[in-house]
Length: 510
Image 1 (cartoon, rainbow, N blue to C red):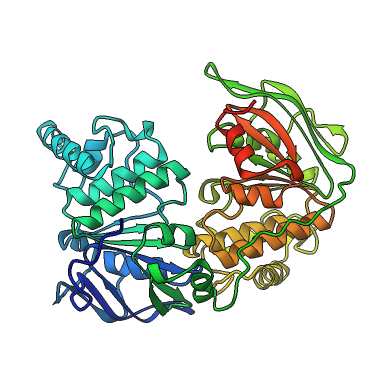
Image 2 (cartoon, rainbow, N blue to C red):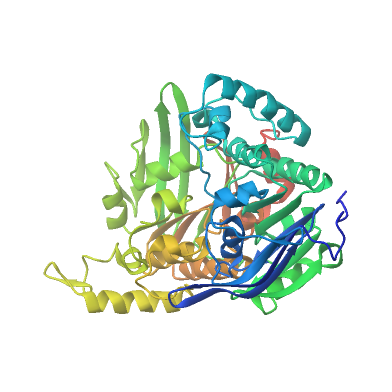
């Protein structure tokens, strides 16, 4: 059960008033007021680029506000750095974890507590305290384990424990479920309720409406850098929250459009991958036709990403064959994949989809740079590339102050839109879309669905891989269920339902 606020409506733990944060060409926070109360979970909801993370980075000391004040328990607080924030009892867990891979859990917690490397005595003392905190809040992580051996969920729990060890009374989590399985999210939600029950203020930055309704007490909605409303979650529904977030009614359903597939585009036979004695893919067969979407359903980590890597040439199979357009590709590599008409939306945009230190413009045109009219006889046409970039920014609703902004300065959702624009503008024969809506708000998700549907109507073939089961079931003409590197069943759209797919995914049904 959700815990009532212990400090009262008029006595917040943190009060932010009139916060303004400007970047060149952009006002990210425009006179924002926000209260964080002890004993509650506050959801901070908004579209990608609405200013949510910027506001919390101001509170955590990652950014300095241009205007406004912050109060902690009624006393004005000057937060100049994360160290100041932690000293005041404000902790933040970012989407991308700040951990040292080749050190243990306890050693990572010890870092920053004192100058230099942590001593053995310090690590031993920390280990005991970590075990107490983990048991108290249901955040089980082995203090002696190497970070490189931890799952994503365990790494996130470690980041929370780091903040709690430093005495955080306010805990901010930025899109905490973006990389978690459903089971890991449920466990985290229970831990957050435990923390709130002890009087801490929890801020959950998210755009997932189901999560808010499941775990939050209040929800503050931001749009275009401003707060547009705060509601009690008990009195709200998904449609109301979505309308506040995007400023219009949003159809939360994913419509399925029947299709008539054409010629075979992709054929995979007996595809297998073995590494270090492990069989990552086991004798996979599948075909996809023009104008067809083939969805892969399965618990993450059951061979989906190795399959994508083999199809795009990032790795080579141990056995099996890949044919595109009826012709066998003897050795697939990324250049060959693009040459045969392939497009890829990778599941991890930061590692494999974008170059964060290049401009938005460079990221948008990098796969067309050697083609006319962007270049002629090997000579780069700067004017043509800028025109092309502006065209894609407008056509794909990429929210940016300009095309020269560095990719890392864009929100995750706008980075994803840029990847989508780069791949779809070439009208690929085969599109591999892995987690295409991960990290996107409902408005942006709706846009992605429209683009994928348009690709399908043009006759493009799509391999869709998503952890969102509703997404797979609603968009796919056929669904293959992947378990331990094998496709254990393939069903038509008419044969699919959540219960059947769920039983197949967990190995209950044969």
